Length: 187
Image (cartoon, rainbow, N blue to C red; front, side, top):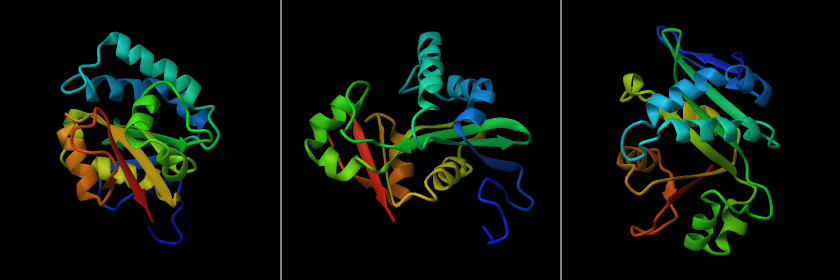
């Protein structure tokens, strides 16, 4: 990006993809688009999200947008939603519930020193029709652009996601037999 281009919006010349940074309020205004992308992105393996999973995502998102430091990136391809990412700084003490407990089991007290204060990438979703074009990397790059440290987790069977994070230079923090795969990135 040039120094004259606002960080909030980004569109490359000749590109049919537009990435847009969203605040919590802006995310709520676009929630239907994010839900649609989530539904198609996580319908297949290894997630197999059904209507209940999608409804749970919508409920979580409504609460997550109120977290301090929440941010999102929405990608549109040819004017249609194609992907998104959401993130916020992990607060002290390290949270409990959701997948946090499994992360703590894998990393122990390291969660307090390695993950607390870092930008936590909660969701990264790309619609099947837009995959294989570098869109996930672009969303993740813009989402994490201003953070010194970031972390995320994925499922051990999310092979494409694991390969993406490894290719982008994220460091795997959990072992090969872990029931959750945690990655971190430092600038």
